[in-house]
Length: 72
Image (tube, rainbow, N blue to C red; front, side, top):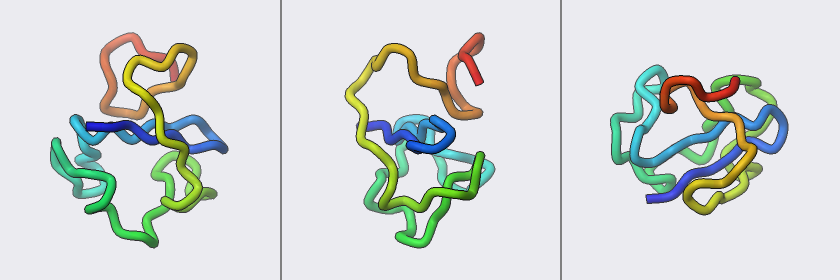
């Protein structure tokens, strides 16, 4: 499973975690996210703007469902 980062606010969508507040349960793949979906943190960037990340990228900000202690 992959992760995708908003280039504007650095929010990260993690396929493993999903995004409950947006209605995406854990293990929701990026392909299942609607094309018109916008970043839930900044609402500035659309899905097509997100940058694919490898696992364990250093220095990224985590989304709201990330591990405890992650930067915001």
